[in-house]
Image 1 (cartoon, rainbow, N blue to C red):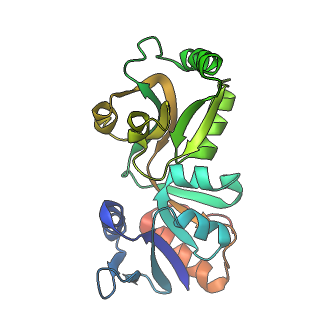
Image 2: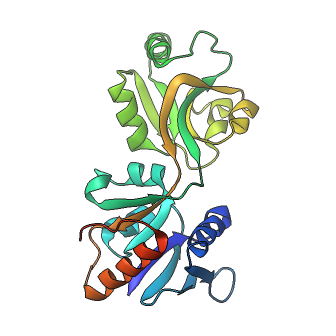
Length: 234
């Protein structure tokens, strides 16, 4: 049985259902609204598994699902050397968001990463500790800032409203997902001109660790034909 992991609620689930449905594969939630199970019609040998978008990278890496739809930002942040663990099969064209570095608007002299690096060094000299950047995306942000030569910062974990951490005094800057920038502006934050870390969108992945027996392979071949994509070389 080919297991397909799909976000369990909200617009991501609806858009995913629409994307597959437009290609002849109907997905629907089974039973009650809060029941995380579903059915796949129009494709023999497939099972729908409803998960949170954040769980899907983990389930792909463990091989407990064969295919999964989630944001490319989540796969890149949660999976070490992600391309060694999953195949990227298709970008689905929705769920667009940018992961960016943002600082307070009142930092009028901080517009670039070089400016941020200088501000971080000055901040540490004055306050005796490193400038704090709140984020949920530790791996992506750390790799990006290291590659750009930014030092004298520390990442602080944010599992709530990241944009509000500057106002609450728990961070001096943020690294977060934004689609329109409205939430940043509402919290008096601005993105750095060269602070784009990753442009994310909903993406279909296949798990390299999954059990790709003859049945799963045959179903993947049939699904790939319907979707108009090239299946991975298993």
